[in-house]
Image (cartoon, rainbow, N blue to C red; front, side, top):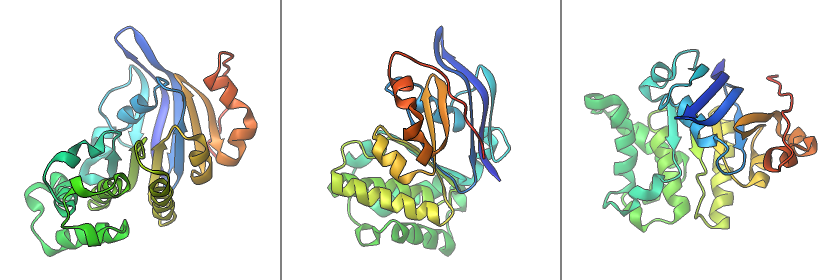
Length: 245
C-alpha cells in the first residue's frame, strides 16, 4: 500500500516560492529520511502531508485519500520540533499519552482497551516506569519518547518527526534512533526530517533530498555516492532523477 503520495506539488507563501514540482511516494512500512538545508521546504512538505496547508498545484494523498480524511482516527502521528515545549506544564507522562488517544477518540475514551493502549505505548518506547513522573522532570530523550508514545497510543500507522532530537544529548539520540529503527522493523512507517546526514543514512531505507525542488529520491546506500549533497546544499544546483521502486 502507498502510505503517502506527493504528486507534482508546488506551494508558495504569498509571493515566496517554497516548493516547486515535488513528487515523493512513501510506501507502507518504509523509513524515509527527508534532508535539505535550512529553508529548503522540509517542514512545509510535512505540513502539506498532514493537511495543514493545501498545495497551489499538484496533490497530496494519505492512504489514497486527501490528508484531512486520511489522518482521521489517529492513523498519522506527528512529533514537531517544539513538541517538548509542553514540558513546562505540570502534567505526567501518562496524562500526555492518554491525551493523545482521547484527542482522536473524544468521549469514546472510556474503556479498558483505551487504558491498555496507553500502557502498551508506554512499554513500547521504554518509559512505563516513568508514567507517573512529570514531563518537566524528564531528560530531552525521555520527553521525545513520551511524544512518540502519544502517537502510538492511537495506533498510528505513520510516524512523522520534524528534527525530533534538537537539544538531546548524543547517547539519548542513539537510543532514540534505535527505538525508531525497532518501530519501523515492526511495520510502522516513519518519515523523519533530520539535519544530521549521517544519522539519516544510517537509519533510513530511503532518502529524499529537498531544496525547494527535489534533488534525490532513492535508496539510502546510493545517496552519498550520488554527489547530490554538493548540488542541493551548494551553489551549483541541478535536479537528479528519483525512482519509486
